[in-house]
Image (cartoon, rainbow, N blue to C red; front, side, top):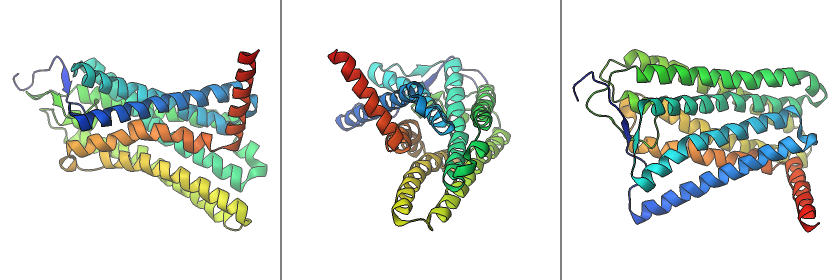
Length: 311
């Protein structure tokens, strides 16, 4: 294929080889992905059915679960199909849609996590003013803003990336279409786009992350003066939340905020697994299943189901 021609399809080289060790890893990734889908779907159903959970906090949790379900559904089927059938090609349109949905969901989750940290800050530090500082209109605006900002970033990067001319190489050394990996195949000068993508990453990653760290910093400063039991509970909650946030943001920053020449493909693929598969599986456990109200609602829901089956 001559320079400047467009390719009919891209080839995703995938994550695993057909060896026994990689087969075990493949099954492990599928298991984690399936667990993520089940856990997040359970959170969505539980929050929807239990009227006591119809609050801004749990609405934000339901949006997080929905984003995680869509993220796993966007990435894992392509990975599994390529490995099991050997069909690793993906059309330019399919690649564009994958970039769009991945960035919409990943970027939206960045801002949603910031909104959730603000919600926790208000609930812990200003509980009496919670209905005013975290009203339903504000909650809905933050949620809509998360989706819109993520979609704007995804649409921009998908359209610009696919408008480049691609050279002879059309093999993407990844298990899904990701803008930084696709840009490597372009024949055109991509320096301006890389700079714009870097600015977008600063806005999409570092700004929400700074808000999250500020919120949890204020929470920790407030609970340090509390009674020991409440302090230990708050510290445990904050540390677990920050661990998941660190995993998600750390992996995303590692991928998107390094110079193109310092992005080894193998490292990118391994790190990408964390924020496309592992983090969506951890979110319902850390943010939801450790919550007493969620656990009580889950017990009551299971008790009602058991009673109906028995009846």
